[in-house]
Amino acid sequence: MVEYRIDRRSGVATYVQIVQQTKQALRLGVLEPGDKLPTAREVVEATAINPNTVLKAYRELEREGLVEARRGLGTFVRRSLGATPADHTALRSKLTVWLDEARKEGLEREDISALFASALDEKCPEGER
Image 1 (cartoon, rainbow, N blue to C red):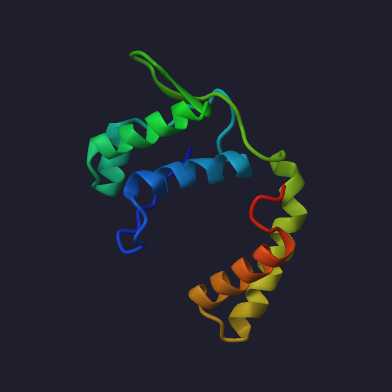
Image 2 (cartoon, rainbow, N blue to C red):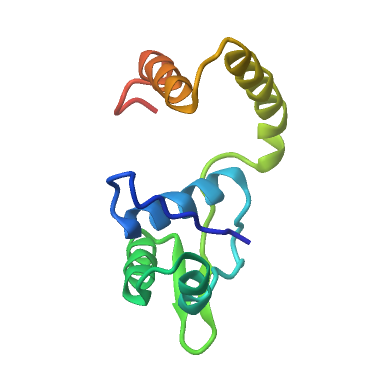
């Protein structure tokens, strides 16, 4: 089950954060085809956002073909993104070690994020698969 975390200071629209977190969960295998997304009411209770914001995010995901709304039942995952979760285990472990080293070097979250984004842009330029 995905648990949405809304960062009101990020400058990213709330519905976009829900879309992004859902896609991340699909890529990491946290959500799989057939899984049910939390109801708008559950998301509202957990995050204190407007229910229309949740519904807007779910409509965007549905428009992209990632989820489907089933009348009276909820919203369900139609397809996954990325590789299987088992493929990520070794990489996640290495990344965790790297993050531990970065923290020991005194880097803060924003420093790590900037460093990672720089390396990502260098190795995986936008538009390249």
